[in-house]
Length: 260
View 1 (tube, rainbow, N blue to C red):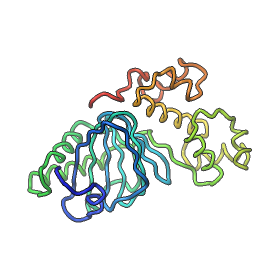
View 2 (view 1 turned 30 degrees about the vertical axis):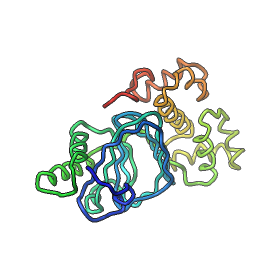
View 3 (view 1 turned 60 degrees about the vertical axis):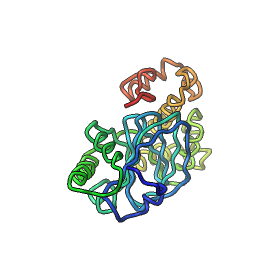
């Protein structure tokens, strides 16, 4: 959709059409500070990777995926590698049947084509044909299951301190006992509370943090051997095996960077 208003203004305009969409082509990486919109937002990637962070956690958006953000959700973002995709804003009324929390989702072809059709509209006038497409978009989003591409932050301040340190340095190989001592708690508390507050064990949480960083590095065309070493894996083959178990393909075969 062609609109000369800046995205923040469009996102905060609760009136108007139920959906407003834009196609995006990025030649350089970008970062946005924390902000929010009156409208719900979906950010989709067809090439590259975007990571979105909130107070509740981080979500990674590889090619072929999107992140859903409900209205007024404070979030910041960063892209990795040359990228392309789209941004979709939904009116508060259209968001009533949509998830109340962020999630990364895989975008099926029907939904992708409907969003790109909306992005091609030259104005915000909504006739019957356009409204049918808008209704289809909302219905399809409501049906999408969440993908395991999010990393929730624990609420306990001691656990959150550990989690943020691992997000900054996912290769840090300190043991759970060493992390607990650093955070001023016990290994038993750390191992017990992590799954209660994040639905992931401490080991699984750290592993997902490393794999999410691996996706970002792949988008920047970092060699697989360098990724494995920089993320603290004991061997390249071990990293490739873990990556395949998590994503179903090897790092070299992952679709990041391909046009979807």
